[in-house]
Image (cartoon, rainbow, N blue to C red):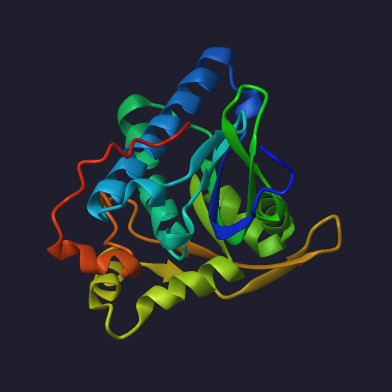
Length: 242
């Protein structure tokens, strides 16, 4: 792919397995398989439930070794925090039933830039400041004294950057009662805004999100897809990329 590839600005999720490198090899494999299966399942639910068109699906799931990045189509921007909460609960359920993910997982939801390129295997991959910010944001949150206590006390934590939370709040217009009702039903909560610098001196503002961990969550449709309820479902294959 040429160096002039167009950047997109969208929701990006980073899933990071805590203490992954300390796990035995077989347990590392089970943990990675669990998180990839959870993302595949949730992506399929989101795409089917929201009547996603073939050119609007989740663009990529990119393994990192101890987790993965999820790159959303810009039409789904604002949906990242809900998706992260859904993944969190699905992984907790998997952990209880299959005894996986024993060390926990941190998920970062961010709204930022991603640039597509063709990697050495011939597959589409992504780089960009949005992906970098996810990793820096996780480190910045881990270095904040209060957040460090929250992260250590909880097996699965959702960190939402200020840009991601702002886009998420755009879903909460008075007309979108289904989103508001959904958040009330799942006991959605958020902390105050935290602010911390990474090692490069960049300031990151973020919140920690939570909801009832015992619920199986299928988030309501994003705002942009509400009108498709009256249209016939698409028969296009929209399986996720990984």
